[in-house]
Amino acid sequence: RYRGAAAEVAARLAVFSEDGLLIESEERRIDGAVIVALNVRDLEEDPLLPPLSPVVLRTVAAYNTFFCQHFPINHRDTAAGIPGILYGRYAEDTYAGGNPWVLITASLAELVYRTAEAAGAVGAL
Image (cartoon, helix red, strand yellow):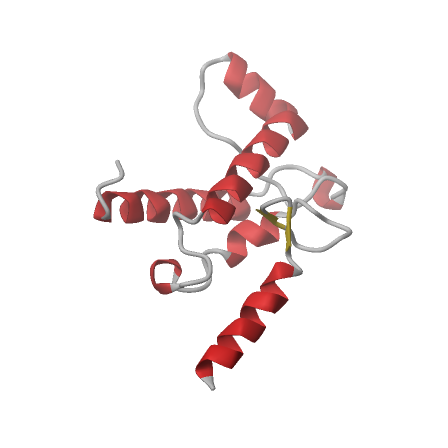
């Protein structure tokens, strides 16, 4: 019974994966909500999307590339040698000027720390 339910959940999750990345929807392939969603469940115990899974790591890498290119502040910080990436909601966002969002950036930081903790636990650091 549980195996059937697990298979159904995995099949439904496949709808939100494209090219090895997690997506919010067909209309918004890159959306900060995905990063937030990865933190609102037990990452360490999740057999479908553990923090060191290739799909989670590829998603964060793709989002890093996108948001580094999308926001001028990330360009300036990189040029100045300031580490870090500010994340926003999505490319077409115009709310409050379409700027980076501190809560999504904080969620990225939490995900990075949780991933590092998981890597340390398996001796991958």
